[in-house]
Length: 277
Image (cartoon, rainbow, N blue to C red; front, side):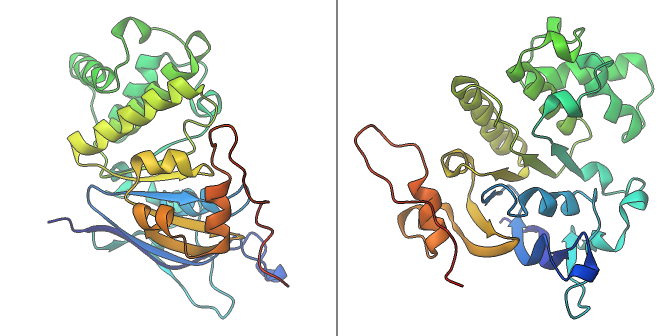
């Protein structure tokens, strides 16, 4: 039976508490082991800010009345740990992230091999060269990255190859949860499809839990079990993927569905402009 791996309750994030504005406002959800949650919404809706808090790259903020939400993983409240201290937390290696832009997230001076090996040394304490080499090759095989590419620097790799390096690096410490911040946005459609298929295979074969951020519902439909829709930092819909696609409960959810690519000749409604003020 699937059990809850992650619980997020009443989470807020403000970059200027004096202003009273929130980038994320009272968001919550649960994620079971082996599930994939999609987080959808337009740019600026708070998607990336939310998963950066879950990854402990950014701290949570108190709510407007001073209330404190929490992020609980494996029955431990990780939101109590400030980001600069969470690096030494035992759960640090259990939460890994794949970023949107591999050009900025991969060290340009590291070969693909070094990028994948780095978390093995830093988070897993591996020191023996042969042990590290064996594990890097295993990870390359998992993400279908040819071994001959491991000696290349990021600028010598294609977009899809860099995406595979980023996924292999995230898999290296043996995480329970992978956070994916629009990792296929910059890829060609054909390459994007192959990366999504790879992620789905990894989820099934390794029993991984995932949170996948995207503004494109067609991408989330391929991979996710449930979808959380955000608008202006708030949750406007949280439902199983089949329910969202067949009967969205919010006007904004319907707008996102209408914005999905359609065969020629089909019309779409105007973009959702938000609730009447």
